[in-house]
Image 1: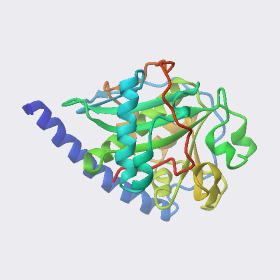
Image 2 (image 1 turned 90 degrees about the vertical axis):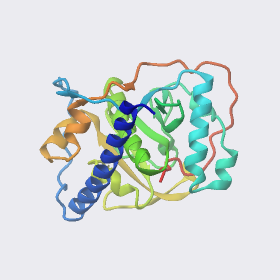
Image 3 (image 1 turned 180 degrees about the horizontal axis):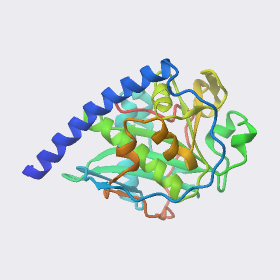
Length: 280
């Protein structure tokens, strides 16, 4: 490993420690109602000032566009799910919905050796309803707009995995801005739902209600949503500790150029199991 790579990895570990401390602070703030407030009105995407600084990571994030990349995604999913659902992880393969129109799959890869470090699938309702819409009827204020649901999240273990997860969520937001999405929608189990609250996602059905989800094995999940058009303003007004990192820092290692997944199929049906698994 070169000196530059060692330095970069050291920086990631420091960032991971900062991220962990930040999440603890945010969870405490949520409990004290520091982030409570009325839902912001629907706004169109406003002009945004360019990021004020640039930062590189020892990994890249891009949209999958080739068969071998999709196989890396499956490898990462198996590792992440294997820490929680080992029997299911052994059976994981390419899923038919991975190739659906309106779907983008993010892959984080190490610059050092190309190993997969994280993945996330983003499904929009441009062509078909979201997975969550097969389980619950969304309220009218959410059901009528352009939506994107993040599923199949999996990252490597340890501190690097925590940073990769944070960068995947930044990529999710940037992708939604790029696609002019109105709302990001998430389903989450306890205690992972608190991390979404810390990122100012709103409880769709109110007061921490957990609902059995047919599309995730009837396990109780909360449905949370984040409004894309006002996210920057809300994070700035809340003095969110990650505001500068997410919104004011340019990460050239995130590449969200559109990709074509119309290559040959080797698929299985999307299984009915929890779709958001964190690598820890």
